[in-house]
Length: 115
Image 1: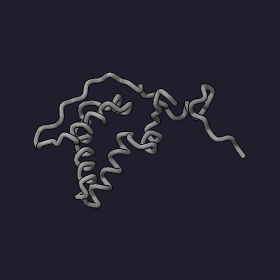
Image 2: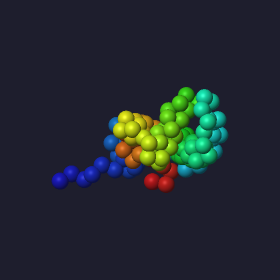
Image 3: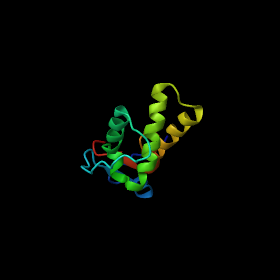
Image 4: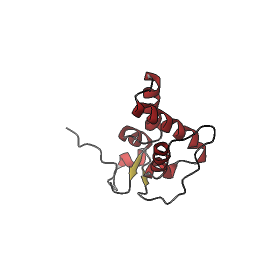
């Protein structure tokens, strides 16, 4: 049986086939302002800041703000118990596409600096 691939190995051919990006644990980038157009609750503001302080946010630019704000809105509705099935599904897809899930991290070829 072949050995499992280890993309972190410096001699791995798999690493060359798939670009691996090591994300900094503390990127030090500023947190963008929340989009205008609605009133944001305090817990939504906290979650917004937490998302923009993740290692994954080092790979986002300001154009990602709309997607991140949708994640915050869906998350808030899920916590409040008012989210529709569509909101649940979109939250899952958006968090994956932003690399906020293990599956999303793998798909994007991202690892954190401590791995």
